[in-house]
Length: 250
Length: 338
Ligand SMILES: Nc1ncnc2c1ncn2[C@@H]1O[C@H](COP(=O)(O)OP(=O)(O)OP(=O)(O)O)[C@@H](O)[C@H]1O
Ligand SMILES: [Mg+2]
Image 1 (cartoon, helix red, strand yellow):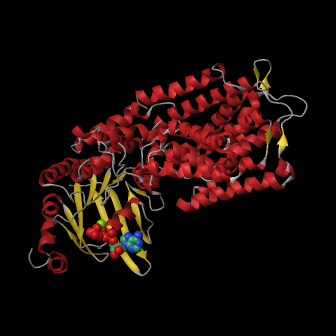
Image 2 (cartoon, each protein chain N blue to C red):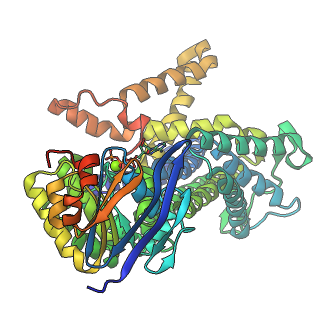
Image 3 (tube, chains in turn blue, orange):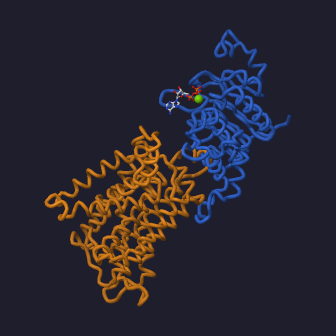
């Protein structure tokens, strides 16, 4: 596997006052590779995603997206360049329909803000992308439902669908499986498999069974620092990881 | 806008168009002209507050600039042509809004409210305390603008119909705008700006464009006001008017264009009612109190405003409407609809 690098974070650091939430973390996302980041609560996983996506500013380090240094880019610009992210806590548009949630996300790649006389719901680009993303996430039957009224698991699916609707090359997924039922989890893992060949995927997840099933590479964080990184077998057998994170039982 | 709402709005405009021929006296014509002009102001504010989630407390400044521009740009010898004076007034207000927006949109929440108020107060003091604005007494318009024989705005019925045409134009423009990609982006910003940025929208230009358009539309209202009254004074820019415009859209129902329309009518008709000595006698002097009480009651009992009333009654009749009071006002998350 000679793989293109889609995203590279180098020595990523973020301080909040005295707290170093993320400390000199380097991650690489390649095509055809799911890179899982695991770690205890408060380890800095979500902060890492926020830093890579540009939602918060770096205290140090650099980010490279599809071969370009994007460290100084704003979040919307990184997103338009192909960086998609989902949120740990649902960040949908609760008053819109499921379809409109996806359509508006898709509109980001085709904004045309000046064409004020054309109806948004007749925009062929965004409506098609929205339908496609909703289909991939298994939301076909819910398109007309109000997003705030669907179940928690379905909102998690919508969260992913909105992320896919922008047609990103890189996916940063923050605990996509949290709160999902067994069936929904299976669908999500199948979808990740499907996306793997042409995306660079960073998966933050607490569900260890799922992580060890889909991940090609695993990075373990504790208190903002990477303590181990490697393929699943290496992580499973690392005594350091066992001690610090997985515990004796695993 | 689904069918029943379109029918409602259409019926309102038809009724307004017929009103001068339904035995409306000069008092009625004058009052409804004034209300329609305020409805344009309310609609301009609805674009910001109801559709984009930006609570602007300085809308009167744009209204006032449109009005002052109409008077200051009109000649003292001859009537100006509406064809250039109207766009000039809209442009003047829009430019001021562009400047105010460029600075105030860097702040959020309460700070945004305060900054927009501060800029409006600045405009107020410029017309109140400098030679430009004629001080407290204001300035008179020598000649009403028009368009030769085609449009003689000295005639109250012509003024009425011209104001109605402008109102319909503004309403239609906003209705089209809000369902465009631009309008949907504004709705997204209102509901969840963080997500908008996360998916790739640089939100600042959208908000600035909305702010500028809103200022321009308020300026159109100001232009009409100056032409109708033939006179402007600093009170047009006072925070009282900014506040009244906010009350109108809240009373009517935030997040709906027809809410601004209904709210403007309700607010000004109530004000007129409480000012009527024939009904309230001496109490008419204290009309602020009566109006205030009604508005508080309306906000308490109509969480979705007057346009939400039919739905509320339907639910009440179906026996499921209890216990959802206040939600839409505290955090107006409702999707913008016309
Ligand atoms: N805005 C903030 N200001 C100050 N500290 C913060 C902020 N956001 C996060 N932190 C701190 O940074 C650390 C890392 O938080 P983060 O949310 O990244 O952890 P996490 O690994 O995602 O945890 P979890 O598994 O619970 O989601 C925590 O100690 C947290 O309290
Ligand atoms: Mg987290």
